[in-house]
Length: 77
Image (cartoon, rainbow, N blue to C red):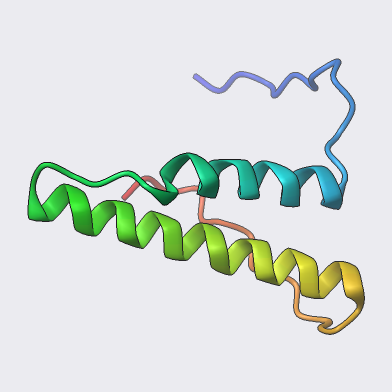
């Protein structure tokens, strides 16, 4: 059964707000280490992904790139 999406009553985030949230998430993980090699590698990958997304947002906001990120797939991996 499909349910219609309900729009949030909160206003949509601006690009600057999104960049700020990505930065906050990166800062939260910046000095963390995993207890296992798998966990540590996962944290490294998350930091790299967050950094890359931050830089992409910044470049877009500064007009350095016209690249628009692809819409994420709706399938679950």
